[in-house]
Image (cartoon, rainbow, N blue to C red; front, top):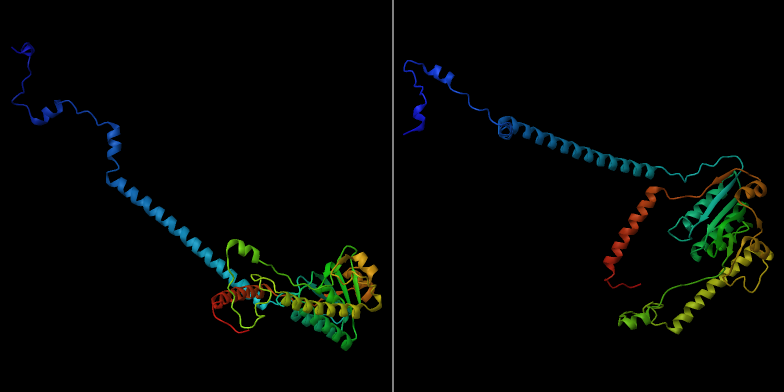
Length: 350
């Protein structure tokens, strides 16, 4: 027996229409909001949003890439223009005035064939200075520890020749240091002026190197040097010192030293107050150098131009490498070094 049999049953009316039956049916519950939100991206609208976002990101990346590429091109263009400007701009060509002036030539840094204090550059400056009709005298402003005796000797001889040809005075003005080969050049001047704290002197010659034979023996390294000529490997740092070759080198240094001393004596004359240590390689400050006759007085460039030359205007005749020339030299040196490394294995006759 069904317990529900006691409840009254509502039977469908046979005459009722279907639409009336649907209106009478209870409404289905609405779907949960969470379910609706999950299903939304799967629709056409969510896919289009994803494609649009991807397109925006792609365009942004392409714009950034294009900006970087344009920036690098502009940078290279600027560098090319700068190099072109440096090649054609020559700041060391001096147009000297016709009015009386003091001609300046700098002797700065190491004296060597490949530096700004090379004989080639200094000779060109000296000739321009001496030949200029407005130059009343030539001043060498020196700040150099010395260098090649060959380069210094070439400059010394040319100064003596130009002085005799043009009849103009030459004065040396020392700033920080005037030693060794730099003093060799200064000795050609008619007078030398220094600061009281300048370093002056070092009249001597040296040849330096290293010896590694003891270290090589400890490490078990054997030097294998092949030469044609018994003295071709002279002073090789990996070979034990040969007394006869050492004596030969010392005699050569002594001869160059005597040449240096002769130049100083010729240039300074009776002003030089020789002492046993004067030509030993020692150096002195400017005040002591004046007492020894290595210098004539205290003074700087402005003092010499104003009080000695009597032409206060100073014109610099010193030629200097421009930026492009320095870059070209460094590039050439790098290329030359690579070539030397490539050719080291090829036997050579010197």
